[in-house]
Image (cartoon, one colour):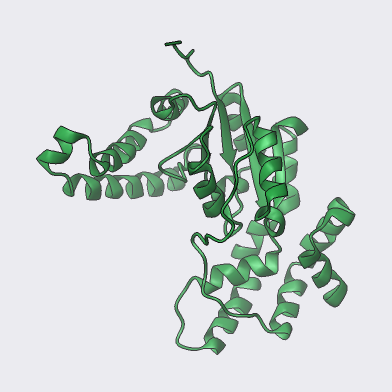
Length: 287
């Protein structure tokens, strides 16, 4: 058997954005024979390096998950290395990473067998500043980034529909409040995200994907080609982390467009004819 050289793998990092199909993509990668998808989808490592409060919040969450899995263990789990024991080690190993880049990479290397690619997808990485993306670039010699963009109106609508409401009017009002919230709208500066990536990565090392195109053989094959792995059929019927089904009325959609007008203008200028029809239709109707 050939011994694998240390750090001899491509690290694919999905950097977001939230509510853009990243859970589906992680599920796809888990079924790909050439990808070791992290058992913890969102490792929240690089964002923890940038902000002490984020670090504290993430570590507390990982600690609680570790305790939960530890409490579920039995002596039989320890003897037979069961799935419950594996769940525990996945989270306890994440705790020991702390702020160490070496231990972060060790986390993947420990779980690799013959796969050429390891992957994690942390959606809040898209909010990293230029310095944050520089830390990602310097962490490993072979890194590929994937950023998924989604029509901002649909993205907010998806965020809102994850919650439970007593009636439809409450849902629509929640959408309007979310769309006009500066705290939320600040997370939709796609142009800034791409600029921070471009300033640290060559065009061969990052890929921008549209959510509206994600669930197709062409797009999945393109992602596989980007990562240098074989094409693998995706199951586009499977819904992962989906929201409640409800159509957004036109008048509320107009409210969302007015709030994200700058995002639509930037996207039209940047992507032109390659902009998905879902975006182009909103621009035509409300622009």
